[in-house]
Amino acid sequence: MTVQTLDPEILTGDYTLDAAHSRIGFVARHAMVTKVRGQFNQFEGKAHLDFSDPEASTLEITIEANSVDTRNEQRDGHLRTNDFFDVPNHPQITFTSTSVEKLDDEHYRVTGDLSIKGATKPVTVDFEYAGSAKDPYGNIRLGFEGSTTVNRRDWGVEWNAPLETGGVLVGDKVTLEFEVSAVQVQPAA
Image (cartoon, rainbow, N blue to C red):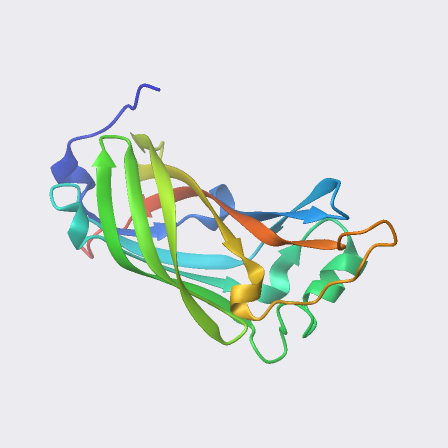
């Protein structure tokens, strides 16, 4: 993949996630035979990106757990209960980076604390840098895509149901997916 990019000095700065052009999603095994995909429709995030010293970069994301969307209202309603996200008591899912490592010109490893349902555990996400561009409004935009697989039980999300033919209804492993468009914050004039 060829990455078009602007000068790293221009790219270094503070960014906000453009939720209208980003996706935070997940994939989980259902009934041992298929996968269910979903996403969160409401989230915000901010980052400080330093392309000269990637280890000085930071990232924070806040997700509204109530915005879970699997294209099935009954399932989404169940995901909002204590069996899964316990939205009334834990309305937000958060991620705060603790380290950023540059692997090569197009790949970064971000480690941080993921908080779900009152439990906080470390996770590592490998991101591919998709490039940068200046949009028609003069904003500098960066694109990143990444994923990681976690065990939902590590956050106390343990509900399940046995299947008559063996196995369980919901797999323990969940793949988290990130497709991010970040917009550089312009200094106040």
